[in-house]
Image (cartoon, rainbow, N blue to C red; front, side, top):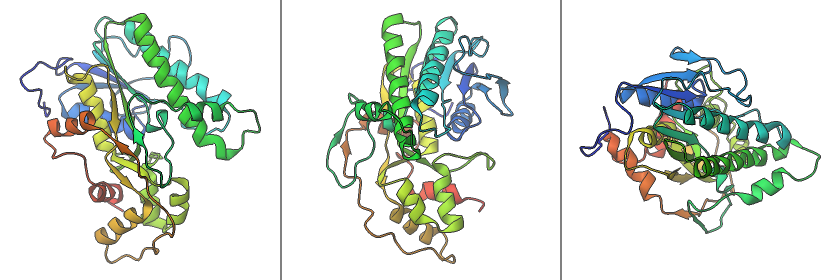
Length: 326
């Protein structure tokens, strides 16, 4: 066990089996890796070298029933990342996937912990050069309204639909827990822009591919336009928060914000220049602006320290992980 429980027993026994849905993805693979490091066995849904159960369609009733048998915890990381701008193709299936996983877990007496991978977008879409405060009481109702606006469903609406899917699914999960009172503790992790080591070089790696793209191609303006200034978090810290939500008896009924450091892609360029001084990179992008939001994230920020870390992984260390081996 590489986690300081302050003398308390873990919420789920060391060596027991934990289900990680979406295990072949960027975050899911790291959640599995951190669980293995903490002394747990892992079962995954998706393609993986770890014990797997095939879930063809998470939106089907009973999709996770078999996968949940005999496990003590569930990390529901899987989501629809197809980038469709049509809310009808994304949102219902993401909600159904979350509720199916929760229902299966509620029917399995051995399960004592459930963590849902939400997103910072369930609270907000980043706002440029605007000072405001982020709290765990907030929900991204503007994204929900915009996602369900009438057609045409143009490609520029895809990110809003993704945000709405996370908002709907997390809110539905909390409603399930309140109304059904299942015999497990529920937590949610809300990461902002994930970057850092890509465990499987064949995976798309979601936002983790952005730094890699800048390093390999120099297309920083394209990445800066796609991903504006916001907070970042190293994907390993996101995974550590999932593990804490599963095993720490003091982490109960929480929305854990995985917000480490505000950044923009000029900051990424500065890190790349330090890390690869012999390589030529483009000049800084003019007029990027800053994410000026504020938040009290002491609960989330303390958890990496229980893994023996000094705190959040820094931006340059995370960028270094992103380009390792390139």
